[in-house]
Image 1 (cartoon, rainbow, N blue to C red):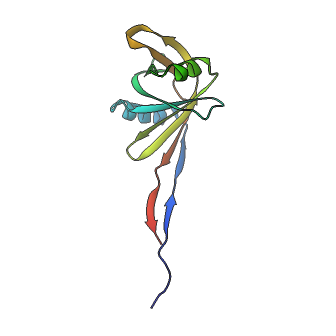
Image 2: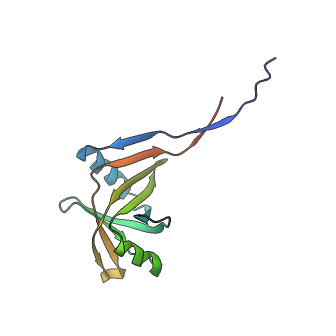
Image 3: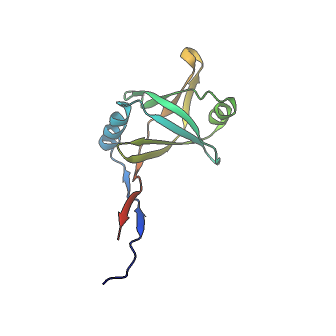
Length: 129
């Protein structure tokens, strides 16, 4: 009789997407669901929830809804760079970018630069040995 214990292990798989076509395809797929995204200003432990509203492929911009939390909004517009995170089909998508423009029209929005590369990480899966 085998007395080994079964232990759950969590595995992450990471993939860096760098080709413009694949980055565009991934962002287009994410856009279909208008996902919630988290924005983390550079050098901050804080992240703030918002939504992806639009992708402008010609201008290479993503439009995000303005953060409702005043402190978070001020941190985002003051940041030199931003880290953006969202989940899509069981994976976390993340990339670094910067704020291109902010507007208070239509409830407020941010335009951020389209990513040149995207990190895709599978969410932990429970696997028994």
